Length: 422
Image 1 (cartoon, one colour):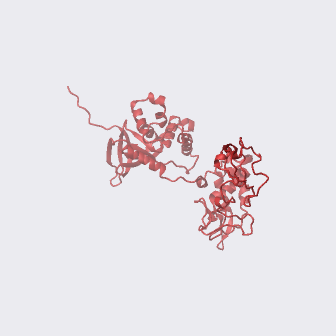
Image 2 (tube, one colour):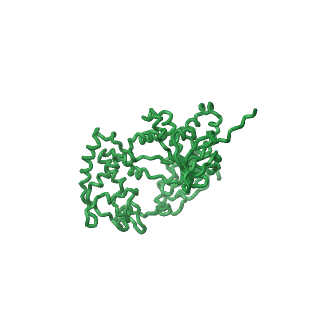
Image 3 (cartoon, rainbow, N blue to C red):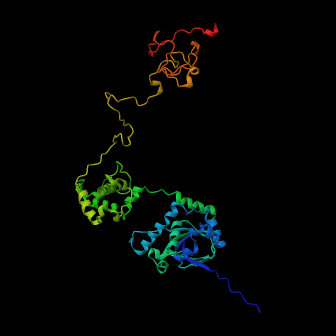
């Protein structure tokens, strides 16, 4: 008797996706599916746990190391805990609708196990199957992936349950059957090609920051005259730049207005906190946010008039000077000096030769010659001086003889033959 084998059935994780390239799709998956497809980077970087893991996990960790940076002992690893708390607060509704996580970029190393037909004709929607044991690696968004692992491993620590996490859908994009070199290039493009936002500009966009919210309230409460109309001061606040250009109609940036608000609240200590997030539970003197708003907004709202911003090329020695703008002291200023001073303009004798005829070979300890000061150790061996002259020792010619009009030093007497040569 011979048993017939069942027809081939592909087993694995099925995902509903939509292609946007011939080798890439986008879609959503559940948290359990993500945890199953992509192992935790913490486990793959733990040498003891990795040694006791299966061969599949070790091969996955080896392939991951070729397209990802390390998580342990890095700023990326330190960000996992706050990221998990941020996601948990968003899921619990503490952040309202103002929170988001970017799609996770995954790399499927190899061909897919199965691709289904279009679910709806003309839409591109279809199902694909990722076989068990397939190498799926997060080449971008690995910090978020690790945070989801922490949430799923211990949801009670974050005020969640496994049932609540099972209902969450995580957006992703999946690149299929790419070479490791192409995956590394995608990692580079996603992490290096982008331009980082300036910290003070990003701070001015944070609507959960108490200082930013208070700055908006102040700008909305002040009314100014603009082109004969009474408008809100918020129309003269630039919230997208670090500095206001001369061609802009705005007169101040939101970050500068926020710095004014923070220093009003904290005093001189606010200068160091102007680039930090201001939390409501960190207000001074244990006052409530409502009390601070009731005092600060009317106080800064008394600004009823705004000086017009100067137009045209401005000239300031502290700011960047336009072309053709020079700042010089008046001619009668005693501090006026040439801007470029070279060594050749300094006062020095016409000749570099020492007035006493000394050369570098007769200077004790090779001190630097100076035409205005007599060298402290001058050896006058030809005059019979047997040891180097000390500082302030009399030298031949001191006290008699003519003086050099250029230097004021005595002219040495004519050389006489050495006693030993006679």
